[in-house]
Length: 193
Image 1 (spheres, helix red, strand yellow):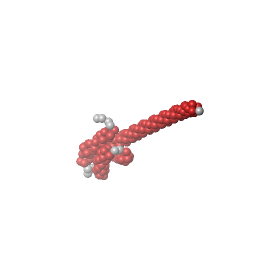
Image 2: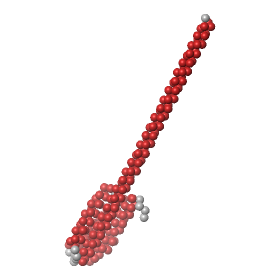
Image 3: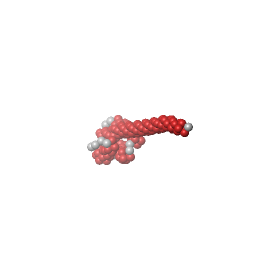
Image 4: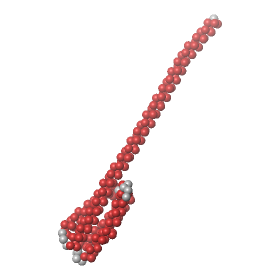
């Protein structure tokens, strides 16, 4: 009986070893599979995070491009309106000096002034501070000159000397500020001189 118990014990150990090996192998396989799944899940998370980052970067780039395009359009409108305003002032000065077609030139001047005012108002909502400062200074110069021109227009004969000097005054007191405004706009847009 002793030998049979030994044989039975050996058989049980063999069966237990075989079953244990199978369980151990299955356990290892399950753990390996879990690790693979975790690694795959981590990789998917990283890929999603990378895709989200790329999307964020692209959206930021697109927003920056749209902002640049919006500012460019605003700058073109503001610069054009300012130049037309000065041109209308110059034309009105000439009309006052000649005494010809003053009403029409005044209407054109008012239209140019209102167009400039509207474009300047729009720019206040769009442009960065550096450009807003130079645009504001140009606006003050334009409006001060416009005010003087309106005063002179009340009686052109009394202000003949002032009207004659007005064109030079526009070149000395207004155009430099318009050029400074244009330079600041070009700088903001990244346009090289």
